[in-house]
Amino acid sequence: MATGVFDLLHPGHLYFLREARKLGDELVVVVARDSTARKFKHEPIMPEASRLQMVEGLKPVDRAMLGHEGNIYEILDEIRPDVIAIGFDQVHNEDRVLDECRRRGLSTRVVRLPQFEGDLDGTRKIVRKVAEWLALQERLDEVEKGKAPGAPPQARGGRGRKR
Picture 1 (cartoon, helix red, strand yellow):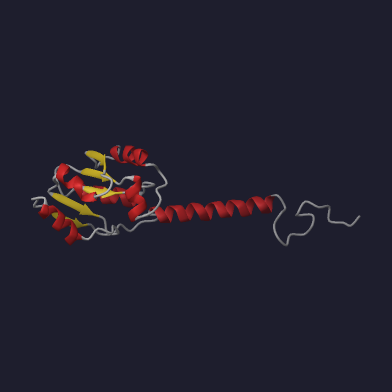
Picture 2: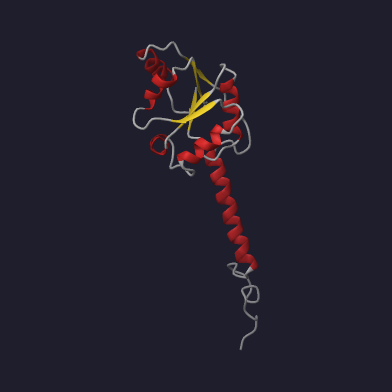
């Protein structure tokens, strides 16, 4: 079992799911509800139904489902995983996850996966890059329209001579 928000899919997500898939015969992925994403990470960009649909279509994933609202550990009773893969940057505490599994009579193994090293390997990095690109585009638009601060009058759209 693997869990996550999976907002703006990127190579880090694919790495995580490929590595998680190697740990067992079947990979069930629990996609966080919007409310859970807000509580633990950030306001999701994509709604939960869209994030679920995207994860379902990924090759390493055998089955994907939305998590439970409220107690995130209740899903363990349904899935009863042999192994839970935790991403390197996920806030889950391995000991807490193990305790929850034991309380439910599960002999689940918990594995924290290593970090993926890649360009734009996180949702926040992607959002930051898009914001930088948009700011650059706005600046270029200003320059092209002759509205750049400090530009000579003819560059700002004036005729450059006094009347």
